[in-house]
Length: 499
Image (cartoon, rainbow, N blue to C red; front, top):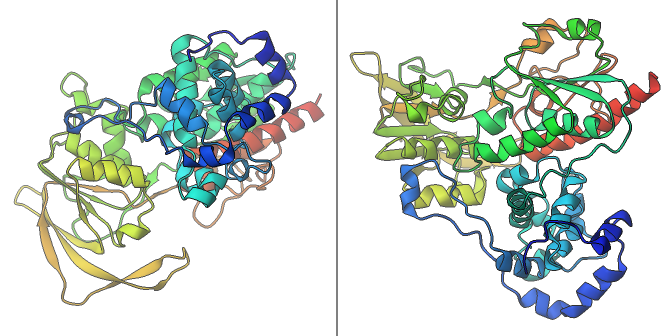
């Protein structure tokens, strides 16, 4: 089957009828359920070991033949639990059945009904703990449909074939102005949803490129910049204006923007304040927060120094403290910067690691060394004030803590030392404090997060909404986008009531 760059009249009719079910019944009937369940999952092809020498994308995407075969594994259930497992409510069986039918452009359009960033989400979403975890095929066979891989396939193929630019206004211009603060996944989602509804949207971003954590926090070997630029380009063609190098809270406050005629506001400034352990030696040279380390490499191109202006120390023995996706991104980046020994130091066991299983597997394939049930207790410097070693202590798992995971407990007398010349601390981040500090009356929680109504994402200030990591702390891209969709719907209602 080949991609159809233009939607057939029949497919257009199907989409307008909200993808109604007669032809889907016919498609289901072509392959008995038993045969569908016997089809093995198509695994994502990846580059080999040469990948540690560059920042090119590791995963290569499914071929047309693999994608169609994988789509046939979907049972098109009458009660698709996968949809309820998706924070943005994608019609998952709908887009997958369109792939099975060879209607690839229609599949991408189906995705975009609820997801403004499908090519991004297909790469970085933790589908294994969301939609795929509750897939009904998995309940029978133990192996879910590869929903994320199929999402990436449909979005990428539409991009390559020129059918990607399918975002359209669904309402006449309203004359209402909305300001989105922060061009991360939550802000981009809000911008796209409001623009489709006819509102005038300006995105204010502190950095020189849009994307937020998608561009400064996720390496190109997982999410190439070209994918993000294509997604942002669609928003611009929809009428969204991006104002870069604009720090709301410094360049202008929320009240200043209100005086300029903006009537509704979305705050999506993320969690950019890094957390540290506050142990001896943490101020030694060569110790980075993951936020600084990844921003230098991803956004400021330190990987290309001296061609790019921003340097980063390329250590031969790099230790990364933490067990989440940010830690895995950091340690895999260190390998690409030339670290001969790149280590993860994590205080729990592999079972408790919050990082995606695929990222852990890729790190192992790339030669990363894991020190589980281990915690740093101090850093040791050399005569120049640079980090030279980290003293660690072994841990054992005790009773579960508030997170439900077994709490690590120090093992007396188990201290040992690792030689290092770079350390990256990736133990989480706190919400960006600037807007709460400069916006009178904005209610914040104990940890500096903006408090919102979870149904509407409305803050304590009229017309001001918030979502993503500034509300949740460190969370996932897709949860931030779910916040954005809820906020956009509430903002639309708010703006329409002001007519």
